[in-house]
Image (cartoon, rainbow, N blue to C red; front, side):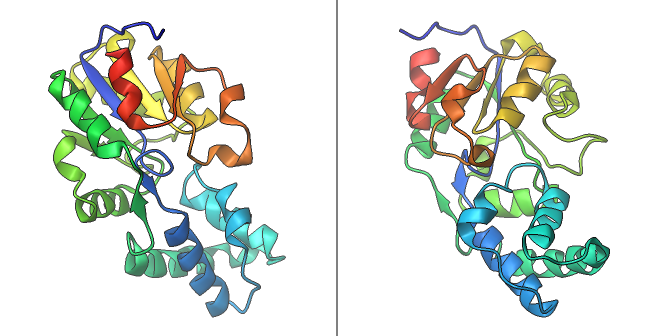
Length: 220
């Protein structure tokens, strides 16, 4: 049985945890590569590139397409335009997410969404999927000097929430989230349906795993 956690706040990841956004990433990258006359990268390959921020995604896609890295600047500019156009269009909220967020809120927890996606895109996506009202704060990959798996985003978010790390639950889908949580001193649960860079998520060091976010009630 899960161990009940003594919590005052929760920090939740976005891509692969709340929303299945692979379609958005693939559509934006396809448009970028068409613009730069590069081969498209299959969605299955894109999935393993997701989770470490836009810079990593764009550079990884360039490598996969055989494009020179000196195209990065043009690819970055094009990606901002194309992702802004498709943000949320091909994305779906995972089953169990809304019930899970309601459970966290019902326990009186302060809530933040912390993602490596740029803050503007994250806020737009949460609003378009009617998830924004669940969160007191939203921080993207451009909000702090470093991104997950560095613990800085989680530590700074705990401060902003007024919650000690040991009483702040982190929920994510990847080793990035788990490593950041461990280093920050936060308990961490991982969902089993996300991306995790193409690696088995149950092999990651975490306090537990959720097949649905609705299962988070077992830990509260």
